[in-house]
Image (cartoon, rainbow, N blue to C red):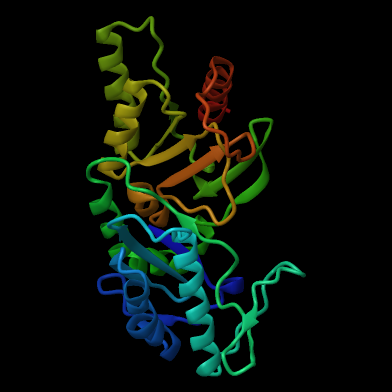
Amino acid sequence: MLTLVVNRRMPLLGKLKGDVDSPRVKCSELGNAILNEEIPKINKYYPQVTVWKTCIMPDHIHLIVSVKEDMPPGKHLGMVVAGFKGGCSKAAMHLSVTVPCAFAQGDNQSGRSGNGGNVVPLFEKGYNDKILLHEGQLNNWKRYLDDNPRRLLLKRLNPQFFTVLHNMEIAGHKCQVVGNRFLLDIPDKVAVIVHRRYSIEENARLREEWLACGERGGVLVSAAIAPKEKDVLREAMNRGYRIILLRENGFPELYKPSGESFDACSQGLLLQISPWAHHMEKKAITRTQCLELNALAEKIACP
């Protein structure tokens, strides 16, 4: 899955229409040119590459592509994307669409059109790509693309729930937060923490108590580290209860929740908190971090 973002996220490709029940993006003249002319050129010039699915949003494009066989010598997918981006930039120029310059000064993405005119890049430099790794992932991608207009509409209706706040003071920590921060003000909160020493009976009793808190409108607070903690949070999410989720990793730029967390966030049912900044490392959470997050959960639940 490839994602290309318009420079400065300008909504040049279309407009969001409809309501939550039937949201859609109506393509602009440029969006239609990209959909009907530029995307088909990918397979025309590179028959090894097939576009399986397309999603054009006002300020970005998602493409699910399949590389069916080896590319010609010296060619790779990055060249395919570069050619597509160049074609889209020229389409914008031909339609007299004003494209903002790239963010970074000296970022030389511009080229020369065939008639000698300057071509301002339509898209930001680079692109995001994800590779299929397991069964079922393709269907998840397709659902994500189909759901994109609805997600955008929910974000616009509830922008306060999708803005990353930095350095918010929570229980003595400077935290990053996303979601409904007013969940912190609800007095009825419980910390969902499962210790190894708990018996089967204790786990069952606590599970009932935690979910009862959610049922009466309280808030479940947890880092959801242990499997039994995850199970309780999953059930609470399914029931539409209020949740404060603590995370080891912070939030990257332009972060937004995914899947069911997105819907919970849009309804004001979820607050995500991290006492640490975002990192790109793939590492397991340490025992020290687990203890710190659990201690933070207890302080939030019982201030």
